[in-house]
Length: 288
Image (cartoon, rainbow, N blue to C red):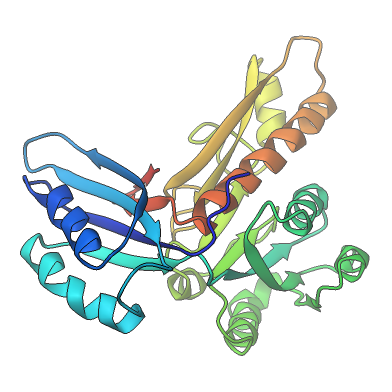
């Protein structure tokens, strides 16, 4: 696995025009930064958008965080940029939300323990108590927040207050958390809640997708990781994958195969987010 020790990454989106790459590269060069990777993407030429991800070594770079913000502002204003700077030494803090199914949680924790996912885990939250022993096994705080259908708003308000009391939590990972989040909850973490949907969206949205896939006689099933928005299962897609199935597969076979894909896709989405490889534009993602 490549190391990204001591990197600064700029994520930029703006209207497309000539000179953007030159201006950004010159800025980094003038302040003694050594570019390690640079990726660009532009949409169609008619009123198109330009997206850029550029990483450079922090150790030689002449500006600290506040100076970088100030010095880059004139370039950002000239090109009407939305931009952000990310430091690889600052690990994102995540809370993982689960219900009763453990396969995605166990996979994430294994990858986290193996240093495959560069993040800190603040806590694990669940509306059930079944998975507490797994949290204990990894020495992580486990918090039980039951959600009652008739008091869902209040229960989620309580959970949100708890999360904001935990210091800076940058990311929520829904590892098969079987609850619909209220709009106020989603708004508190814009494009910072990653969900795994056990289907190849936009097909088979909602509950029981494997049963519906079985009824339809599909030959592939998939999983989709996406950012949560207020529209159920409609948020910008981060990662997807599929697995083949045949007429011999039962619903149980599909669920078993589906779990493999879910684990893989969720882990990939979390990695992309934590490595600052994702820009959101409208309801799409640009993944570098």
